[in-house]
Each structure stands twice: as C-alpha cells, then as structure tokens.
Image 1 (cartoon, rainbow, N blue to C red):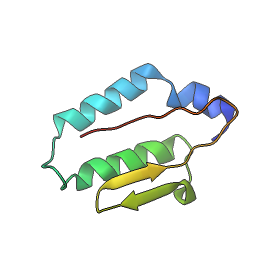
Image 2: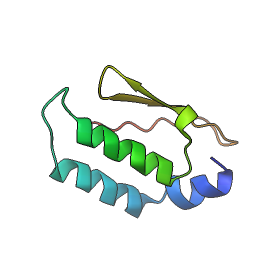
Image 3: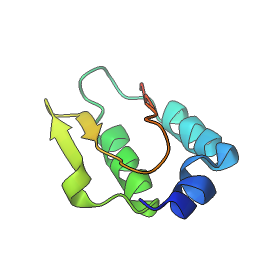
Length: 79
C-alpha cells in the first residue's frame, strides 16, 4: 500500500465510517461472521491490499499486514 493510497483511502474517515455502518446494519452471530469477513477483505482489497497480506484465521478472523513509511497503526474491526 503506497503512502498516497493510505492517505487517500485508508484514512478517509467518511468512507471508513460508511463501511462500519454497513457492517453494523448486517450483524451476524458470533463466530459466524462469514459475510462480515468477506466484506472486510473486499474493502481492504479496494484499498490496494494484496491477497498475500491477508490471512484468514479460525474461520472468520482476519490478520492483515500493511507496511508503509508511517508509524504502525492498528485498525480493529469488531462485528
């Protein structure tokens, strides 16, 4: 993910807020968040995150490695 992409997409608060609202409007049962996980992966890919950076863990958990010039940032999605 380039610095330009991070600034224009990842930290676009309005886009991130809309995405969060979409997830909360389509709530799923605990440990059965298959559509939520799919939506998160699609969102990340739309930002330029590559498949090799995304790991699916324990059915619906997602770990994403994003590297750049900026200091590390953790973004936590909880459905």
